[in-house]
Length: 146
Image (cartoon, rainbow, N blue to C red):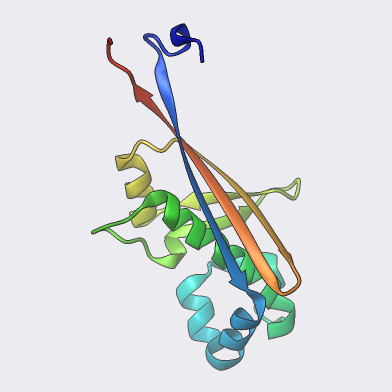
C-alpha cells in the first residue's frame, strides 16, 4: 500500500458480522409462542415484509429468520458489553427497490454513535432451510503524524 494514501487523512475501519439461522427454529418459535415472539423480537414493518401478522408460521419463518440473522450479525458489529440493545432496536427495513438496510434506535443507535460507526450495509438470503445475514459497518479513524 502506498504510505501517502493514509497520510493526514484517516483510516477506514471495517466491522463485519455474519450470522446463520435455522428457518425451522423460527417456525417452531412461531408455533409455540407466536404473539410474544413477534412482539419481543420484530417490528410491525418486519412482520409485514415477511408476510404479515396473519400469515402462517410456514410463510413467515423464512423472512423472519433472515431478519433475526441480520439482528444477530448487527450485534456482532456493535460489540455490546454493558449496554445491550433490545431486539427491536435493530430493524431490517425494506426499501422501495427491494434491497434491505438497517434502522437503529435506542441502545443500538447509542452504541453505533459511541463507536463512531457511520454506515451499515446489510445482505440477507435464505436457502435449504437456513437464513444468512452479513452486516458491514464503517468508521473513519483519525491517524496522527507518524
